[in-house]
Length: 73
Length: 139
View 1 (cartoon, helix red, strand yellow):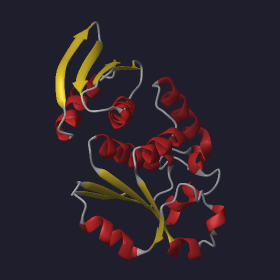
View 2 (cartoon, chains in turn purple, yellow):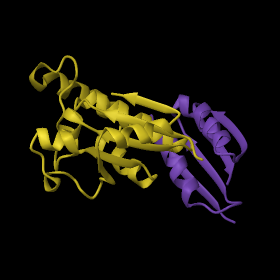
View 3 (spheres, one colour):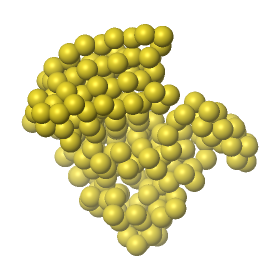
View 4 (cartoon, helix red, strand yellow):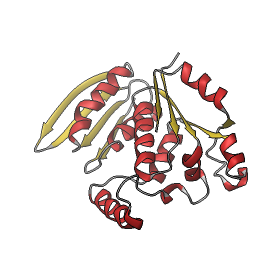
């Protein structure tokens, strides 16, 4: 198990979603993935994708317009 | 069976190709399979060096409109069509080229970016793809 962090700050549609999917594709079961970004819609759409993929959303937090989403693969 | 999105890329206009690729990549990201079926003017974008060459569907103004939109897109940090297409392939998206268009427009396989194309097909290929798709669009 490992922790993977990706930074998509400043990126817009559809990059945060696509980059999340790419990381998930290469990750192993049990890995923790943390995505940091600023694109507002992605903050709710990444959790939607996680649900659709049947994965576990650990938490979502936001501070000063920067959000962090934690996922368990 | 995995859910699927099948999109016909009929237009070669830059903004419409953006829409097609963004929806396709969004679909792949949300766990669907995705196929892009390039036909008519859309197929022009699969020619070597052709991807970014499409005009704007409106307000092209001999390229001035496109130049302005490109500038604004750059400012908004929108990625290139090339990047969207490479993400599409990386996430397992499938590209189908319409063989009738190739015949009508006199396009040869070697004129196209063959490395990206998974299949050359006709309407039957599209129908088979579409009948098992939750989402199908004509752009």
